[in-house]
Amino acid sequence: MRWALLLLVIAGCTPGGVGPAEELCAKAAVMYERCESRDELDAQRWELVIDRWRGMCRASITGETKQLLPDALALWHQLPDDVKAGLREQAECSAKAKTCAEYAACSP
Image (cartoon, rainbow, N blue to C red):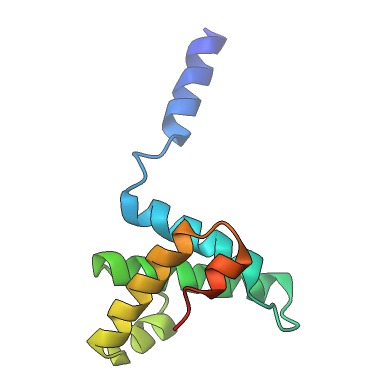
C-alpha cells in the first residue's frame, strides 16, 4: 500500500512533459548563468535575471508571453520584430554552446 501511495505522489509530481522550447531555453539559461557577469547582484536578483531571460527566450521561440512578468511583457511589446528574431537566434546558438567562448560567439 505504501508503494502505491509513493507511486501516486511521484506520478503527481511528474510534469506533463517538457516541450522543445522549454528545453532549448533551459539550456540557453544555463549558459547565460554560467557565462554572464552577476555585476554585484545578490542571489535573488540574479535568479530574477535568469528567469527573465528564460521567459524572453520562450517568447522569442513560441510567441507565448503568459510566462512574462509585467515589466518583461511591456519590454517584449516594445521590441521590434527583428530584435525578437535576434533573441531567438541567440537563444538557439547559446543552447548549443558548450563553453563560454562558444556562448560569447552567439552575441551580435
